[in-house]
Image (cartoon, rainbow, N blue to C red; front, side):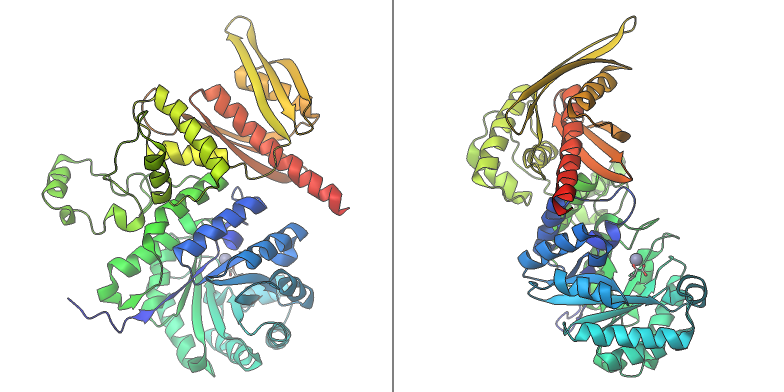
Amino acid sequence: MTDNTHNRRILIFDTTLRDGEQAPGCSMNPQEKLDVARRLEKLGVDVMEAGFPASSPGDLESVKTIAGIIKDCAVAGLCRCVEKDIDAGREALVNAASPRIHVFLATSPIHMQYKLKMNPEQVVERAVSAVKYARKFCSDVEFSAEDASRSDPDFVCRVFGAAIEAGASTLNIPDTVGYAMPDEFGRLVQYIREHTPGGEKVKFSVHVHNDLGLAVANSLAAVQNGADQIECTINGIGERAGNASLEEIVMALRVRKNYLRVDTRLDTTQIYGTSRLVTQVTGVKVQPNKAIVGDNAFAHEAGIHQHGVLANPSTYEIMTPESVGISKNQMVLGKHSGRHAFEDRLKALGFTVDAQTLEEVFAEFKNLADKKKVVSDRDIEALVMGAAASVPETWKLDQWAVNTSSALGASGAIRLRHKDGQIHKLVSMGDGPIDSIFKAINKIIGKEPNLELYEIGAVTGGSSSQGEAMVKIAMHDRRWNGRGVSTDVVESSIKAYIAAINAMEWDLARDSAVQ
Ligand code: KIV
Ligand code: ZN
C-alpha cells in the first residue's frame, strides 16, 4: 500500500449551473438550479459556478439566491472583462459566504482578431483593468484565458503574469474548443506554470471541452502536470459535446490515487444522486454505457464476468457501486413497508423533503405499491421529483379522459383547476390521444407553445412500470421543461405538459412583474 498522507489536494470547480446550463436543452428554472446547488454543496465541490449574472436579470437573481444559501463552498459568477458584467457579478454575490468573481478574455490569435477585434496589447490591458476592478469588491478573483490551448503559450504567460500582479489568485487554462491532445495539454499546463511570472503564488486551473472526447483525459493530464483545480460538470453537460465530466474525473482521481498521488474532498457517495437530479431537471439522459453513472456502469452481463464478480467483486469491478452512491443490497420496498423504511430509503437516496411532501410522496408510494409488487429506487426517485413542484402551480390536473380509435381519430377531455380555484374543462379532437389532450389544454390556457420534445419511457422494466414523460415547450425563443410520472402513460404525459406550462406561466408572470 502506498502512503497517502501527502497526496496533493485537487480543487473541484463545478460549472454545471453555468457552462452546463447554457448548453441547448439543459436549461433549468431557478428552483431547479437551487436544488442542484444544494446537491453540489452536499457532494463537497470546492467552488460552484452558479451562473453568468450579466447574461439576464433571471440569471443574476438565481446566482444571488444560491449565493445567499450555499455556505460550504465558494460560489462563483462568470463575467466578461467589462465593468457592467463585474458590477452584475458583485451584486449577485453580495450575500455569498465565499464569493469568487471569474473574469474571462480570449487570448488566441483567432479570437483576438475576429471576435474581440483587439490586438495583444489591448488584451493585456483589458485583462489587467478587469481583474483590478473585480478585486475592489472581491478578494477571490479567477482569470481565464479563453481558447488558451490555441494561444501562444508565451502570450498566455504574459497575460497571466499581468493578471496576477493585478490581483488574480486563480489562473484558468481552458481548452475551449476541445482541441488539445492529452500529452500536449499536459505539457502546456506545465510550461505555463513554470513560465508565468508570479505563478508560484497562485492556483492553476483547467477547463476542458469534450469535442474530441478527450476532456477527462486532458484534465487528468493537467493534474499530472501540476494543475490545482479542475473545472467540470455533472454528467459532462455543456456547450456542444460538453465539458469534462465531474464524476469521471473524481472517480479516476479516487480509484487511481496511489498512482496520481492526489485527493479531493468530495463525498463520492453523493455522485449518483447528483447525477440523477441533473438528468431529471434537464431532461437530458446519460447514455447507458456512460462511465460511473450510466445504467450499465456496474451491470455484468457475460456469464464469466458474473461468475467472477460473485466469487470476488474486484475481479471485474475497480470500484464499488456503493462508492458512487448506488446501493445494491437494499431491502425490497413493497405494500407492507412502513413510513420508517420509506423515510430511510429517501435519506439513503439523498433526498431531504419537508413534512408535507413526505406525506404526499408516502401516500403515492402506497398507491404504487398496491399496483406493483416491488417499488424500486427509480420509482421512489420519480415520485419525489414529481411531488415537489419546482414552480408555483398555475394549473393543476383535475380529471381527464381520452377516446381513440383507428376509424374516428382521437378526442381528449380535460378538467384543470386554476390557482384562483376556478375549474376549466374542454374537449378537443386531435391526431392521437396526446395531441388531442394537449390541444384541449392549449385552448384552456389561451396559449400555443411549440412542443419541441415529447418523450415517454418506463421508469423500470416490466409492464407494471410507471411511465415517465418528458416534454419541452418553446415560445418566443424561450424553453421550459416538464416531467410527469404515473402508471398510466397518458396521465404522465398530461402531468409533464402541465408542469412545463406552469414553468412557462411563472416565467411570463415574473417578466410582466418586472416591466
Ligand atoms: O470554455 C471556456 O473557455 C469557458 C470560459 C468562460 C472559462 O467556458
Ligand atoms: Zn467552457
